[in-house]
Image (tube, rainbow, N blue to C red):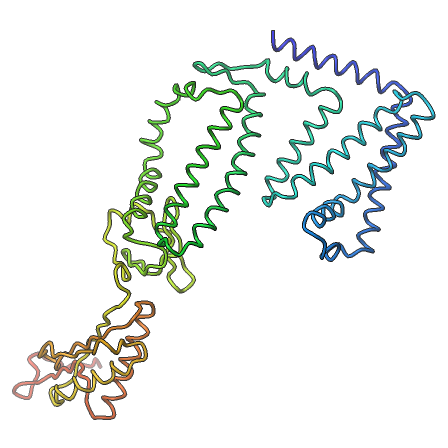
Length: 436
């Protein structure tokens, strides 16, 4: 029955359109609309060629500047609406009003587009602007030609019943529009709250990220609940999908849920936080961001490692700045047996103490660790205030050790192999016969 109603409605629209295009005034109005469109495009080209649109209304207040920006961007639409309205006034006083209805429709559609462009100028997402603009204009067009209610009834006549929920195309469209609007408002509110939380100096970085995530998730859940309630969907009617959703989470979304829960755990126990210098497996760097599914570790050479939150919970993580940023730097080196080990340790301690980043309150230490086959082994340790750039500090100290050893005549050992031949002859015959 519903399908027959739709077919009958389409036939009625086709008969109405056929009757209209048979009138000569239809072609007159259509021609006036085409002329107005051509003149609007020409006026827009001339306006943009002579006016600097980038500096126009630059010092005006924000509302007036936004209005001017919309009018400049839609200058052709403004000119088109003015010309069509003028043509409508002329025809209205020259003949019957019903013979200029197309001009009224074109003018209303042009004005509706201007209003929609003005309302969507506060939206920063380009895709969302296009989606909202086109949707609102289609609704306005159906309303102008008095076809909004019949179209709504036709979309509501086709339905699919799932459990206690009746799904129709009209319900899905309404839900989509309301959900987009609710999520957009939610994004604005969450960004505002995030900026306020990040400005608070009383909260640690991990607590700030945790609060932002909880607020974002809570606002998204609230937006979805409001959208469902606005279209008349009872949340209890969705219980039929709970089993399927549970199975999907248990299998297909297992890793996603695990990473999400792991991210909440990491933020709650403060084991890692933005700004920490960490080593996870073969990846080392500073944590630049903590997301719902992963953390971003900046390596310092342009690379960023995206490590799942689950790996930080289940694997070994070295946090160089967990409780204290002071880091112990260890430099191992060796000398030959001709050197005085006490003098070597003295030189090493003086060099480490003179390092620019060494902590003066914690004196360095050098010990003799081993009498090896090639020489004596030493271990030099000293503290720096921040682990960032530790390899650079270590390299600078080793270069200073090298310069000091060369100046003081201290030699660094290296492997030497001697081959001794007993009895003056090799144990194998090495003579080679040269053929004739």
